[in-house]
Amino acid sequence: MATETKPVAAEDPKVDLFEDDDEFEEFEFGEEWDDKEEGKETVQQWEDDWDDDDVNDDFSVQLKKELESSSEKS
Amino acid sequence: MAYLSMGEAHRRITDYLSRFSDAVSSQDAAVLSPLLAVSSNSASLQSLADALNVFQDSNRLVGQLERSSQLAEIVSPLLRCIQSYRLGRFADAYVVLEKAANAFLQEFRNWETPWAMEALYTLALEIRLLAEKADRELASSGKNPEKLQGAGSFLMRVFGALAGKGPKRAGALYVACQLFKVYFKLGTVHLCRSVIRSIETARIFDFEEFPVKDKVTYMYYTGRLEVYNENFLVADQKLTYALMHCSPRKEANKRMILKYLIPVKLSIGILPKQWLIEKYNLIEYGEVVNAIKKGDLRLLRQALREHEDRFLRSGVYLVLEKLELLVYQRLIKKIYVLQKQKDPSKAHQVKLEIIVKALKWLELDMDIDEVECIVAILIYKNLIKGYIAHKSKVVVLSKQDPFPKLNGKPIGS
Figure (cartoon, each protein chain N blue to C red):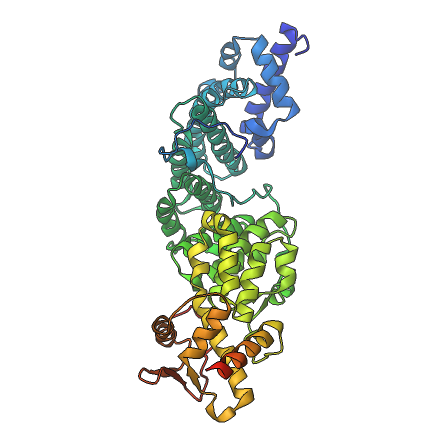
């Protein structure tokens, strides 16, 4: 889009109507595929058990230090 | 252009015309479709366009066609379209293509079987692509770009011709998807609604019977609409369908699906694995995910600021902004776990002062009243179970499940 020379008319809403950055690419006519294959991969794409009690990561260790030092002060 | 004799030009045009008329009389869509694919840059259409420049009176040849009256209405504007397109005059080309397409649609309605469906698909696609080119041309010369809107009206008529009962209905979803592309580009997505209603409420046709490529495209666009409407559960369902059934050869499409599916999943407490973000080069979500995992509010805000443009353009910024509550929850949970390690008996009492300190460490300057307000919201949204002891400025956490997980439900539902 950046290469296009459009008239300068920012107030005209029609000018920016030329874009949808995420326009789906056309599939070929008659294109078929085995859509069962993908199932397995899909399961391994996501995690829902991340919200654990682990506080050994850097962030938590830092947080701990911070809270301890501040509780000494107060 | 190489020299082209009048005789050769004549031959090319009559050749095209007879192929066209043969394809119609033998009902062969595979032959007919490429003859309509104006923007395909096929060598034969290019050489036809050259011939049309040399041989000006092509209408006389069209008149000699068998069944000429019906076909001439299609072919005669179509030839002018092919010629204008090759000359780069897209607005002119669009006007005549729409004429040809309307005449074709009229014929198509009269054909009892859907034999010409592929040809109709080709026209629907060409109309949209050419309208976009025409509008760019019109806008750059200071004229009103209105062809894509016109294409939308035409496609709506095509949709109307297909969406009823009968074997032609299988083609309705393809045209619906073309309409979505038009409406998303024009920013008139509310117009999708009547199309969706016609597809989803009809009892006469099972959605699963549509071709898979159209189902995937349809789920992508309707999924995006559900994201804008903040119906995250439906959005999740539709976009997940699109992702699972998308052609493995279309990585770019998978990436687009994930661009919307990831924020949807985040908002119901499900995180994408790191490899997924890397594989599809969606690194703008990497930091957001890390922020949620850690409870790092500063990181979340940084990530939103850094990629603000991108998130605003795709319309997911507001979805991501709401993740703050999830990150507050995570941070307070970390504080709670750390307290528990030190002194389990007092862990369920978290001083607001401590939260203020943690936020200050993250360079977020909030006073105790603001923090109390945030905690009240977390309790209200069921992200924290407990109550606030206002006088002593303490959050008293429930001993049972003080930080309920979303478990695939949206925040606050």
